[in-house]
Length: 476
Image 1 (cartoon, rainbow, N blue to C red):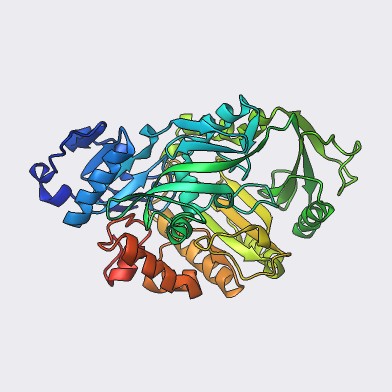
Image 2 (cartoon, rainbow, N blue to C red):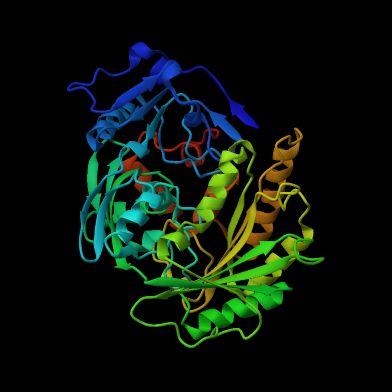
């Protein structure tokens, strides 16, 4: 465990905290008031304690505190529900901003909704469904996360035609590293818009968003298609996508022994019934056995959230989660997945407790349009594949578990990037300056320029290590 306990405070002592006039509408917590979760994230690999936690009552609270931190050179990080695994949301000795207190729905339109960025997707899904709508960009498998959190990293769903969640965002409000509150869209401050969506919190804190909407499906029809080989699973997914009928396509990979001597590939397919009825009685890409289910949209959207929340209640939060997440180009995906699965050990499969997932998501490359989310170079009509090994440690993991897993991730990512892949940086990847330059490739100059413009003191979101890469220092 990478523990950096320390006992710092904002510029050394509580007496250094700013006197805000008029007073903050929210609360600024210091000392023993700071919640323990502000020093960690879901991974439980890294602990870094902030000096203070802001629970804002309004966006102005964030702007005033960030402006003070800018003047003083104090690090700041927004915190939602902490669904990263390598300390990305942490700010040692700085200010953590608890975004979950900003959770209002401001306005609905016929095709868009204006919400504060701290609202949970779980709550927004139910609110929209009650009005006959859903978010147009697709939902992640686990939805008890903040809207601003997933938009800061990208947000990947099983919708193969839609790109990332950030591709269905119309407008955002951002508090920059200077403490300025700015609205941005493709027409209004487009450079900031491009830099903030999927930008890992490096140019500002997303505080409010306008999202695209789609009609609520009447029902969602799903199928789980069992496949015994990686080749068969890829063939079913490709056929499902090529037929162009189904809305969701992805694969859940079960460990050896779950249903046979090798891994079992459960290809998950879904069709959203709106004004167009389900075409025929069978699947348009498969005529073999499949487990079929029909659910209401909200029940479908929260299906795996209910499973994980049960794990969390039973102590899953305290397990180490050294997640591996990588985008793969179409030509290399099948062979990389096959080789990786063959090399996986029981602890990679979250044995013996089984509280982990191995997932594979295909997406049309041309559906992605935001530059900060790095993807393999790929013809727009071809696929990119997100491969996730979301494993969790035993409750009594041995002292070498974390280092073994980080070494594993480093080796896997090296092989993936050599094949043209790119990290999805929610996982446990330790990046220095060279790794970040390689990750952003020919857009690195844009990353540097945006930081200089919007976060010149390099105070925002130090956890990923991009600030250290720009300053020449060590990762904090």
